[in-house]
Image (cartoon, rainbow, N blue to C red; front, side, top):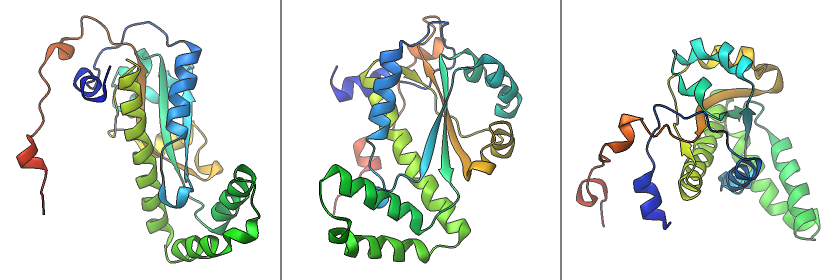
Length: 208
């Protein structure tokens, strides 16, 4: 399936089947998410994979009863880092040095630039920046899932504070940002038969 066909095929599923994703599907989708781009390459977020029905049942009221949360194969929670600081850069430099077989000293100028950028952010700005990176990963995951014929339903309407409490995210310097049930659509989901509604090229794209 080419990318345009895949994106026309996908929609935000309202009713999932009981079919579980196979482990290889989940692994490949998470690997595609891991490969997402991010500002300075720092990836200031975590992806929490929730299979447990009991945990999802506890979360359901705080997703305002949206049944995709519990009826999907898995629930993904994209959680932004709240501890934005130079340690993120240090971790990245260590990883970059190892992966590219180069000295960390050769990355000093990049590290200084990234650290300076993070230092200019207050707590609120740092969280906003981290959440933006999480949304980039979400978008990449949605396209990758469509290419794999895995169904999704990104959800921004949920009580983030309650999710954070139930999943113990605050103690781990994380803040839930967006959630996404994944799985296989119910063939009887009426929304799967509706034509996709998107503004046309001329409405959306400005060419200068």
